[in-house]
Image 1 (spheres, one colour):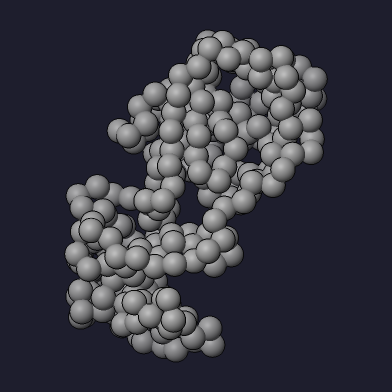
Image 2 (image 1 turned 180 degrees about the vertical axis):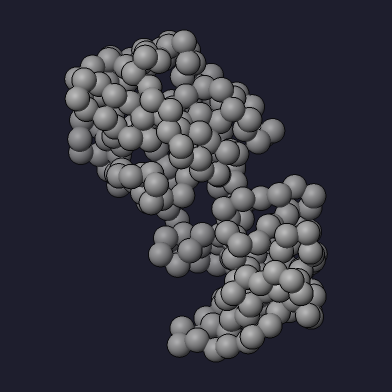
Length: 261
């Protein structure tokens, strides 16, 4: 159960206009507001999906300390007069060819500034409209084994299908051996699902850190996973309807603390 095929994300990079109003804030200060943003869809080392806004839609005094880097990007410090986010705004390194629509546009850091699609805050990265997240209730029998020990068994999972990622099996807490769970301090955010909290699993002398997560208050679009728990099937032995599942290879095959969810 340790092989598995590699789960790959879309490799092509492209830009397209969005009909959403995009706003960016530094603290309480609105630094950019646009109904003419371009969505750059990208995955992997180049980054995650983000919006590029016309420079004309950025508050003039918000950008300071302009500099040109060796990577072809122009960078700025974003400021509201009292706070400064150094190097938190930049241009695309090569706005030519199919990406020429990004010329005279700028994007911002998703960690140092707050982004909004219309009036709703979005975390981590822009939502890709070509990516689907579907949840389906199921009666499939799901078993989760860690270090040879059965830690969960359920016939009432919710299956979550997300483009380019392994199928996730969300289980009721009552179907998990909760005495094996140890609360973790890890919290992550997903633009499609919300804010997740984590648990580690201890079986005898074996501790699998940050192996289980739950969304206590998921985004309104996927309410069915509320307060259910899910295991990284990259790191457990999963059995579905009596059939052992291969462990998929994905960005979460190792420590979740180094990977965005």
